[in-house]
Length: 255
Image (cartoon, rainbow, N blue to C red; front, side, top):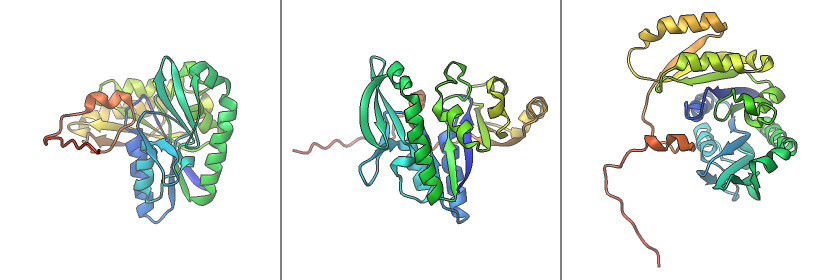
């Protein structure tokens, strides 16, 4: 049975995907076999595996970081928004149906079965599974149907690292608020906190770090600097981060 670690965030675009990829790479370089896992992804940016399965592009990037081939079980459920409050539901890399949010949530228990089977298969083939959550972990209006954060954490009980993004400000409030809003059984799984995207002298954060550790009893594992990375993103939140390329674009038409 594989050992697991889960990366949750205070919101979308805090850096969960990149941190997951980084941990995959570190473990792979230490000689372990590692697989990324995200139970459910909502993204229009997808990747086609060698056997034709469609998964979220972040899981493909994470698999490459781990030095393994991307497979459907790494992202068993992919939701591709189509407008009009509907999404194309892709299960294990294959198109299943177009569903509204309401219709999809009515079948959430059968979807969770697919998630568990995918995780179990990975756990037989790899030594470590690095699990990525989605969006903010403390979406209290969705707790009864949140399979990707609460559902996976409850089912597999992995140790959790919570990631907060300081770039937009309010990182201590978002971290503390997220922890306070989480159910008690999930809160006890959080073993550490990472503050991501910091610019400047990390020493300036010391008073806040000490106070947050005192309030929560959870250690701050590290402060990661803001870094521009040429890695594909899956979140619509990140669209505003795109910058024009310095070079011209060549367009070719195949006749």
